[in-house]
Structures are given as structure tokens and as C-alpha cells.
Length: 67
Image 1 (tube, one colour):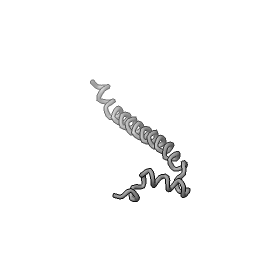
Image 2 (cartoon, helix red, strand yellow):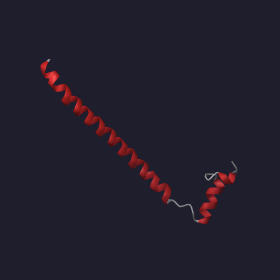
Image 3 (cartoon, helix red, strand yellow):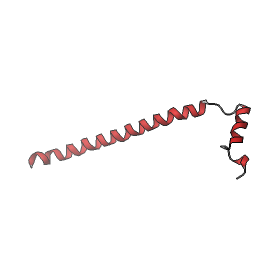
Image 4 (cartoon, one colour):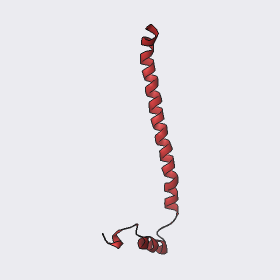
């Protein structure tokens, strides 16, 4: 891999900044999107656990009342 092939090489980044092809908006969007996806994934897992727990409690409740 040559230096020109590596898009993250410092010289390539500087060249893109000079050409106006590298702006701050892309990384800023990613910064907030990553946090949003993390919160959404956490909420999805929490909802799944809550639904599973409710279903398990509903199935076991008659057995627990008898014993």
C-alpha cells in the first residue's frame, strides 16, 4: 500500500482539506450518530429483556401460586 493509497495518511488529509473535500460536518455527524445508535441499541435490548421477563412471569405465575 503506497502513501497515496491510504486515505487516512496525513498528506492525503491535508490535500483534501486544501481541495475543500474534507470538512468538519462529516465527523460531527458521526460523533452524534454514534451516541444515538448506542442509546437506541441499549433501549432495544432493555425492551427485549422487559418483554421476556414479563412473558416468563406470566407463564410461571400459576405455578408459583400453587406451590
